[in-house]
Amino acid sequence: MRFLFSLSYLLAGGLISTGFAQDARQLILKTPCWYNDKENQHHGFGWSLFSRQYYGVSNWNGTGIGGSYSTSASGSDLIFCRDGIPGLAWYHLYLSHSRHLGIVSGTIQLRFSGVRVASVPPAFRLGANAAISLPVGDHAGIGACAYDLTGWLAPRSPLTRGSPGLRLQGTYCPGDLISLLLSFDMSPYINGPVMAGVRLAINERIALEGLFGILPAGFAIGLTWKLSDYRFQSLVDYSNGLGITPTLLIQNGN
Image (cartoon, rainbow, N blue to C red; front, top):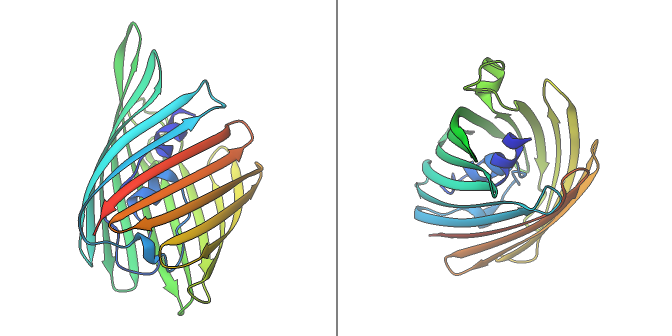
């Protein structure tokens, strides 16, 4: 559960200038990689602020800041965040690098974490995430994301123990207006959820998205608004166990 929290709060810029690419923010947040997401593309330096509130889990909160530098072919990111409740807090440092090679886009992400519990010596964890994606024709793409690679490789080690998982997904975008998505998650412990989503680009600055999941059941509604060099993203999701979880992201980048 704690690894799920740490994944949910982080953000990264450094986006690749292809229509279908899994960036570091999407990889850590486990959010969909929408095909032809032009609102996400920027080059140069950028920064990000984000916050997420878990009302169903003792008001667990995560807040952080990230910096990035990206070009048309690659991007690098450094992100720091704190998530927890009084008396129990996780601190994470993420280093990410994304690159575009031919039609293939990939991201590798390293995580250095420390947990502080009242009256207990701090503990440390290491982790890594990775993603790869490629287009299929002119209007579709497929991708795979591996979460917590060290958990896969050494599941019983106290230093690397976590919640490994794998996501397979496909997207279809017949035009600039609508994108469709289907994904499936699996892990050594449980399979699911299966997620389906639709994204509507009202114009070049505003986009709406809806996601629906089964096993476990859940849904999410999101709004993205680009204003000059700033990008605002809000997301409200609900799932069994975690309850209502609002997220707010502010990103600056050229």
